[in-house]
Amino acid sequence: MPQETVRADYLASNTYRAQAGAAALARLPAAYRAVYQPLLDARPEYLAAGFDEVEVRYGTFDACLEGLGVDAEELRRSLLVG
Image 1 (cartoon, rainbow, N blue to C red):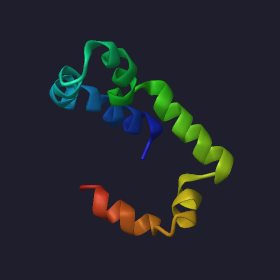
Image 2 (tube, one colour; image 1 turned 180 degrees about the horizontal axis):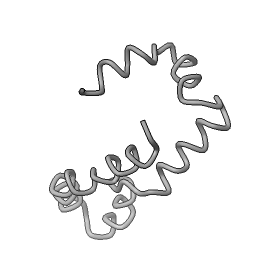
Image 3 (cartoon, rainbow, N blue to C red; image 1 turned 120 degrees about the vertical axis):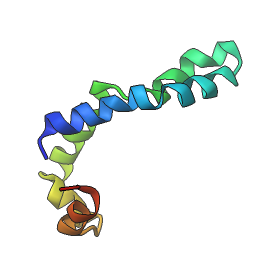
């Protein structure tokens, strides 16, 4: 799957999780909200850091999955539609 597609889907989490995130933050004392907000955000730099780490440690995502004991083809079949 192209990284741009993964990035777009990942960032869409901000929209789909906005209500849940706002509710979680509302339960915290005001002084904690700014600290916890970044943990609830899907940020481009977070995903980029993940891609970079996979490349450094494993070279490819398939190699990463293999290292984790996950069959890449089985994962694709179970997650991708169409």
